[in-house]
Length: 527
Image (cartoon, rainbow, N blue to C red; front, side, top):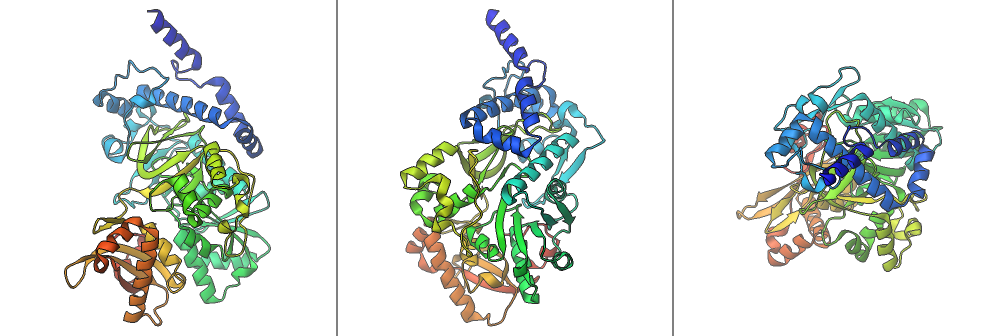
């Protein structure tokens, strides 16, 4: 009896029992979060272990609230054998099941996944995901959660691109998709915005109209920005006269593609998110980019930071106060959004991205053990771009998140799992292929002897000189690049060399397997 009374009193004290905020902390965070300088100072001055501890407490409160107030989540816990009435707020996350599209979203209607089973009509929007997994989904969001997301986008841009005046040309697909509209609304807090969509003609005409006296930020999917540069060069547009920055997202990006973009862009940053959760879960920073590029050049750094996975992951930093991240036994990142302003709470949600998390102090120690200074790795020649050192800023001691990508996004040949990122890194790094490549798609194809082999279809902007000899040479360079990059491929090649030589096919833009890409938001990588 006394123990139950003590538990109830504690729950009431911290605000769980009445479903209200942890008032002192929440008021502080809300106030600090209104100003970029205040928020940045808090991240620098607050011990990281304290930030993560408070973030976990907030995530547990969000989960406890969802268990009582969200009809679908309450039913999911009941069918999973979780006693909702017996849940105590602290330590709750370890007792709750993971959620994802199949186990949660597909099972329950949209309104049942909202707090109280209802939504306010004014200020509420519905985003649609791109359907890259095969089926587009709809995601409902309220005014408050969108305002917070837009402010975070603006803060990220301030940190990445500085406080000087900025004109954003938003080339993300516009309409019901989350990235386009939210990017425009977020960037209005940081400067002038023109929402164009992925229209190369309009982007170049806008650049010509405004002239090179402005600083420009062009946002969009990574391959599209390469297409923009290629088309600008083809037309003789004076891109070199402009100060261009890039903010990309929606899919992964190799450092080889970043190198191509950095030939014209001063800086290129990527954001990480999922329409299922939020578009701004994490973002690249100068130090996270430097870490990744250092790991690309030094196998010892790569192994120490990311383990034995043959892929080079994307590396981000994230705010543990609003996104509580875990890694499950399968190496997949799970997110709980700890804010209480979500209409449809996301509790231990799994988008099935494989990756990991590590705190800032641990990364500092790992680098020190291999002879590197985390605060000065931007000076290392290995992390420089094609035009020299990349923009640098004082590192903020937020935890790092690394993402390899979706676990099922592979082809398998002779026991070797080969990822689109492997092909992308080699193809964009090939001077005979990268400058003319518009897109590519990988698959497994039986050759004339019935042997399954890796295959890549290349969509090229220029077919001059592309013949059987060109394709054979490209296949050999791709084979050598994959051997150097992918341990699985190298092992299988040693056993089955004839089966591991890629089959290369080439197509003009918009033809063959790429004929329908004009209607797609994102490019398909696996055929």
